[in-house]
Image 1 (spheres, rainbow, N blue to C red):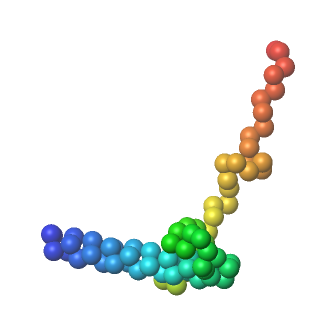
Image 2: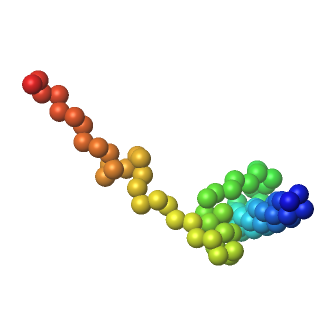
Image 3: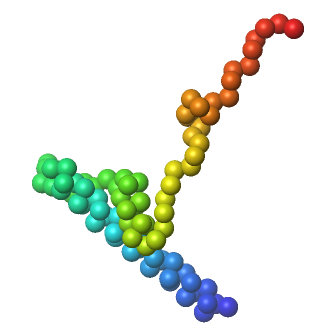
Length: 85
């Protein structure tokens, strides 16, 4: 069992490392396209969810936002009425 677990762990680590590297590549492309390729903060990168979404799409994993949000006005329950009985 130990060999199989190690092999699965190695494959999962490689998969996540590949996704992270691809997301970094997408982040660099986004920053160059946005005109921030050679600014004062050249070494600073901010990975956005869109970078991960593009990287995961290359591996056949589709990311979608849930059909509901806790902060949206549509999903907020109506306020209870405060009329006395």
